[in-house]
Length: 91
Image: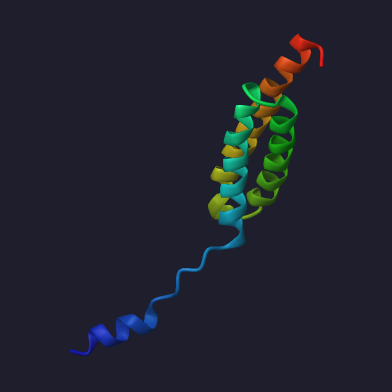
């Protein structure tokens, strides 16, 4: 009869782990680095490098491994695409 009171004591608080925030940050920086193609290519490269570093740290957390991997892939794509305007414009 007192099941409701017991269930509340068994619930664990939802605390965001560092891997989740690191993997998410990697993904966000990778996506933002893609805008370096249109705006400032050097800015895109710097953000992509930060995204790769954070993705590498996020891969160590097993639940967030896939998100961190996607963040790294998008960051690598951001570096490659941000280099295109630099090569074409000879900056």
